[in-house]
Image (cartoon, rainbow, N blue to C red; front, top):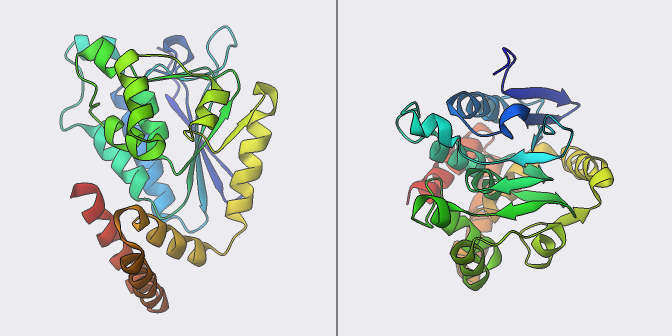
Length: 259
């Protein structure tokens, strides 16, 4: 493996771009990738200059696009996987972030990689994307170690999740958009401009208002209409107390992810 970092971190205005950079291994997610992504997401959480996070993958060595081939199975087979399930912790960290995150997906996105994409708030995919979940086919269980079956079924519905997980089929960007896995789809050459236009639009919003909205939207699926309306009032009260808002909102999100 080259000496360079396996994750390229760049800030473009108020947008923090995280690019998995292991082209020789199809951006497979090893311990170093998990560690550097975790540190970058924590930076985004604590840095007021960051208002949106974009996660993507570097092209393969031959130039073909690639998000990630998922968990590094060679590292796992060698018994070198880090203890404590850091991938699950990273996905929860992304999921709980009060700053919007966007997965930008082209080429292969499978297994552990789809878990990272699912943890993000939004997904922008290329028409040529190759999205799949091979946890069941390769590892003998379709649950996923980082929340795959839970997040996928909540996003696209249980029936669609069953079709993807139980058959191991590969879907392209248009199908991902049709089943609402992705919010936007674009030709490969237009993918990055489309994604960055979305990210900059988000970053241009009032950051305190975005955090307040994120705190509320993180819970609406779990609440009845009446509960959601009451929670909106509670979130406004948190927001009005400044720093106490962020602390209270993070506590709620932590309860959501660990409950």
